[in-house]
Image (cartoon, rainbow, N blue to C red; front, side):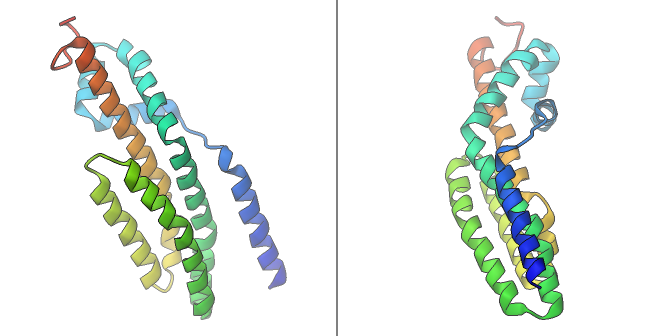
Amino acid sequence: MHKTIATIGKQIAKTLDSLDQIVLDVDRELMRTVNEHYFVERCISMDYDLKENELRECYQEAYDANETLLKYATAIDKIDRISGPIEAFLGFTGFYSTQLCLRAAEQMIKIPFLLKYFKRVDDGNAVGTAITFVANEVASNIFKYGGIIETINLYTYSVKKHIRNQTAKLFCERVVEERGEYGNPSSS
């Protein structure tokens, strides 16, 4: 048992040390932005240089504004990937009080993130994201092996989605400002 706790401690320390190493595939995120937002897709189909220049700049701005939030979300997801299976094991073996203490410790990390996230997010997806976060936590706490649910990257995905939405918003504002009311590239 002592070696298991030491191994878990080493894994958590290793995970926390690697938080600065967030790897994003910018081109994939840009393609997702284009696919998720019709106006962005329409503008880029008319003028591909917008993607290479303007959209990339908007993405960089949105990323820079939300970098700490993304690091926090990545940390939570990494901790969940470690603690989720441990919680499921504790539920399976009957150590419910230990499982409850582990979940309480997780919530102490997640609550400040959620407050910061909802303070930062100003788009219409905040309510849906809140419902998703709450449903995930309720499911992981109600079901005996619910800790397995926490192995998905829900928090990182939500922040990346927010960055893509913010990118699209910045892009649309710039295109409309530069090219006219409807963003028609031919009306310069």
